[in-house]
Structure formats: structure tokens, C-alpha cells
Image (cartoon, rainbow, N blue to C red):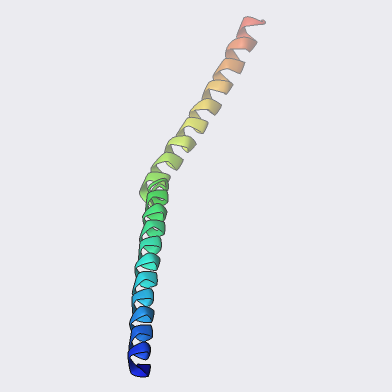
Length: 78
């Protein structure tokens, strides 16, 4: 009977270990999936650089327009 109980306990332990392993794998898979979805919120370096250039161009254009408006206002007030 002692050997049978040891085998039964070992079998139960192996089943429990297998169950824990599957649970950990599932949790890791779910967390990895969530992390990958979060990564989709980031932009690539190329996208960042393109928007940066557009912003710089817009700032330059705004400065030119600000100067032009100041010149026009000056002419208007003469």
C-alpha cells in the first residue's frame, strides 16, 4: 500500500505541476498579447521624423506669416 500511495501522490503532484504550468503559460500569453497591443500605440522612427519635419515647416510658415501680418498692420496704421 505504501508504494501505491507514493505513486498516487507523485501522480497528483505531476498533475498539479502540469496544471500550474498551463496556467502560467496562459497568463504569460495574455500579458504578452496585451503588451503587443500597447506597442501598436507607438509610432515608428520614420513616422516621428516625418511629423517632426511637418511641425518645423509649420513653425517656419507661422513665423513668416507673423512677420507679414506685422508689416501689413504697420502699413495700415500709417
